[in-house]
Length: 273
Ligand SMILES: NC(=O)CC(=O)C(=O)O
Image (cartoon, rainbow, N blue to C red; front, side, top):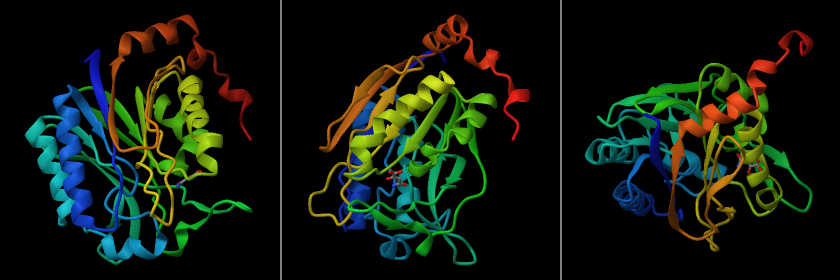
């Protein structure tokens, strides 16, 4: 499909898992009512973004109320749902930061486990150790959909341009990043990174963040964003709970790649380490 709308549900995550699920359900419906064919949720949308809580909120596919809600909403509204992320427990007890992706029939078409874990110690700023409780994923996630090929990665994954480039070289036309940047790296890097991945790779980029919850221990920067292949910002939220939407037009992507043929001008033989 050449032209269609996409929506982001920037929901405010609270401690009560059931409330988060209900909120996601109603915001997916709102995005679909506004004409979105692809709906994206934020990172850890069913759980406060705190390492020590991930186990308590985790679900095992295909069980679990969050996973069921995503599949039901996709089928009910006939939309593709990129289900942000939730803590996922596997059969041996490992926990991942995982995005489940469902098509318009409510069928699981992809699962991305965050590859780069957010282990940082920014002096006077953010200290986070995802690896205390999470295990890293080990593969790239590209899904074929009725709208085109979509690459999915999570939050800190956006800082690794190799991942985005590899997905685009394999045909991705939209890169989707559920994320949750904080008050330090958010203002400094969030929009910059989303626009950088778009301009580098001449793709649409969607970054979906939770709204700011002032009472939460980890404070999300919000600012969900949709960027076009010329790095123009098509839609940008502030920090409050909201649904934002925008049109995606693959004729723009084709024109940008035709006029400025970066992907054809690459010289991979020069870049080998
Ligand atoms: N939360 C993350 O995974 C990443 C982040 O906040 C950052 O890179 O900054």
